[in-house]
Image (cartoon, rainbow, N blue to C red; front, top):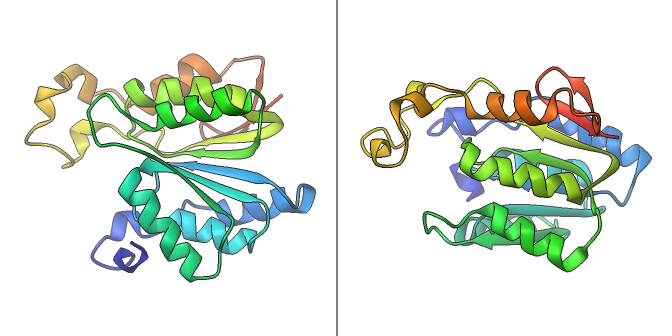
Length: 202
């Protein structure tokens, strides 16, 4: 998968801005930190996190089963063996929120020091993912949300078929903004660290 990083995929070939610095700072306080990335794309951010972690702690990745399996193999090939893959099918009602729920059911306690949510950008999947992450992120840990202002109407992704799944009104609304504004901002359990992006679990 990592071979796809490059000029042919410019918008998804760069890691999340500042992620290496944030993970490095986290590891100074918690050398065995557990980090989760929900939605891996082609692995640009995952690779950056793995390089920063240098085999320390655990890096949990959530996405389609074939994607996380391929990415884990690529990272193992680079010498990073601290990667835990959580895959789901490509069926329409299946998603990473099911993998997160199964993990919560198995663990029954917070395990993540940092969670980076860069999934479908749909309230349908990302709101339940946040609700579950709220129980999986440790007090003092962090949740980072990608693409606060992104909306489907400005994207070519699924443009020919998305009318089968969402309305024009839905496509015109930034779903991550709705999630953050309604459920995270003003939530007494969270402190905003970076405007509309990074929140600390209190």
